[in-house]
Length: 88
Image (cartoon, rainbow, N blue to C red; front, side, top):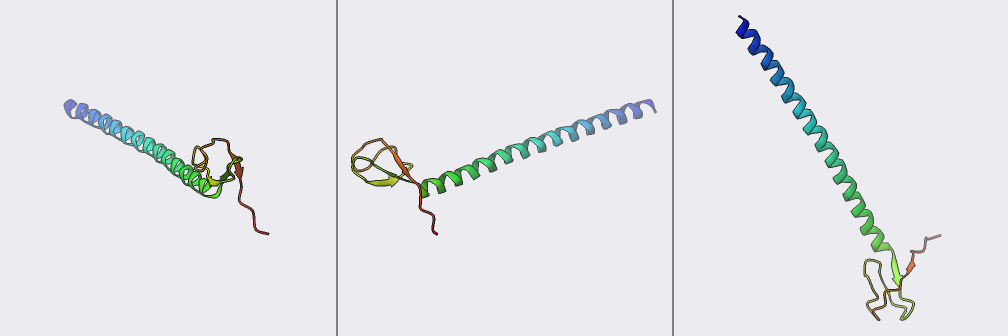
């Protein structure tokens, strides 16, 4: 009879540890997926920003995307940012 009670106590403790482990694992995966979602949102925003913003070279007046490190026309790395005009 005492052996059955001891086994029952250990079984309940084991179940409690398993439940706690699963809960912590689930909580940490939620945090990780939230970080991944925010990273994807920032990637999309950056991609759209790079599509909208153009750079004008002050030397040769070539207009090129903002993700290029230097002017494709003359090779200068000086940048003047041109924002798109808003329709009226």
